[in-house]
Amino acid sequence: MTAAPLPPLDPAFFDAAQTAKAWPFEEARKIVRRLEKTGKTEALFETGYGPSGLPHIGTFGEVARTTMVRTAFRLLTRDQVPTRLLCFSDDMDGMRKIPDNVPDRSFLEPHLHKPLTAVPNPFGGDYESFGHHNNAMLRRFLDTFGFNYEFASATEYYKSGKFDAALIRAAEKYDQIMGVMLPTLGAERQATYSPFLPISPKSGRVLYVPMKNVDPKAGTITFDDEDGTETTLPVTGGHCKLQWKPDFGMRWYALGVDFEMFGKDHQTNQHVYDAICAILGGNPPEHYVYELFLDEIGQKISKSKGNGLTIDEWLTYASPESLALYMFQKPRVAKRLYFDVIPRAVDDYYAHVAAYSGQDAGAALENPAFHIHLSKVPVLDMPVTFGLLLNLASAANAHEKSILWNYISRRLPGETPATNPELDRLAGYAVRYFNDEVKSKKVFRAPTDKERAALQDLHDQLAGKEALDAKELQDIVYAVGNAHSFDPLRDWFGAIYGVLLGADQGPRFGSFIALYGVNETRKLIEDALAGKLVKAA
Image 1 (cartoon, rainbow, N blue to C red):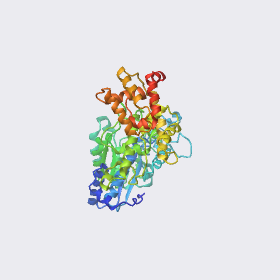
Image 2: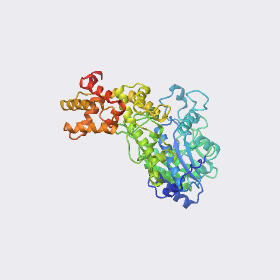
Image 3: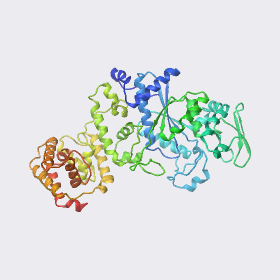
Image 4: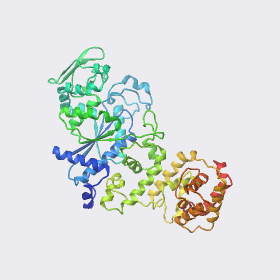
């Protein structure tokens, strides 16, 4: 579907877009130049999805980032060039192995190597096949985030004839395609390779067999079926499909794709995709290769390993917007994706949103909030940070967000779940994150003699200071650290976090005192000095 018109924007935004440096604009300029050369009057963006499993965090990232480039393109062209985003499901691929998450593996075993849309649905319900079920999960997934896209099924495109002309063309260019593919394969694979994968009319399986004959005039391929019977099938009408590398190039040619991004694991094959698209007579699209995510110890995230964060885990503890920010930032840098990155992403997101309203058009287009919200940046009032709420949850041992609101409403008059639903949402995330990911990892320690003296001094200095604001309280914290000769001063704050909060790091402690309460903080120090926090942990 063509995107809805952009919301009303100051003309300065369209002018500023011409020189904007944010990476979506850099990519969008390539597409502008491409259309100027080709004369196309519409820009087609594409993302791919392998429906052998459920959508995951990489699926979100690819569609979100492509959407950001699409929006940048629309600004560069003053929203005068129609655009489409096609989310393509490779659901005609054969099921090579049985996924781990199905309820009954034996149910699927007879259907190995059949196209995913010919495999019965192991989950029951009204879906026609396993592929149809997973496609529905993809669409539900994308719809949840409000993406503007068109869904495309490989099975439907192959069977309906949408790829027929391109497949006939592939038969005509068979030798040239083989000339590209064979040098990329080992000797054993070369002996049996064919870009065409026939669907056995007897077993229904996708066959990886050599071709005995390819007749471009008749539009047929001849091969030996699984039982040794010589069989001839048309290349059209869904009787066969292409191997995945040739399929990439064929799809670009058949659909006229202008932009597609993919992970670094595809980069070594990019020249193959491009070459096959060009052999068929197409113009390979603009590409953007992004880095893959790493887990906590720096290993590549893998669905089979189950390392790193899942999309559901992120959305349990933080908003989709914070995840979109993580996707926006430095796509070409390998980043670690694990629980500890969430708090920073959340607070950075709100900081960008807060800054947006005061920025001119040029600065606004460099602000990630513009790209996350596709120019419709909300106005949010966030008087406290996620990090501060996490430490409040720790000090208050909060098991539900109402406990946090007892402190928030007392320290910030007028703030309630009803008046600030965004803060209420954040409080809910903070409680879940604390209880699931922080509480069990907290390690309180006893203070050294020097730290004990300084903490006792801080306790005494805070007496009667209930009326001070966060900055004034922070000044007291600094003064105590300096008075007790902490050099560097961060050692003093490390002592505060380790002794009082059981953490390696924390928020501005003056802000924490202001929110938690002066008397409550003094009691926290008393408990720490008495050894109660270590004992309780």
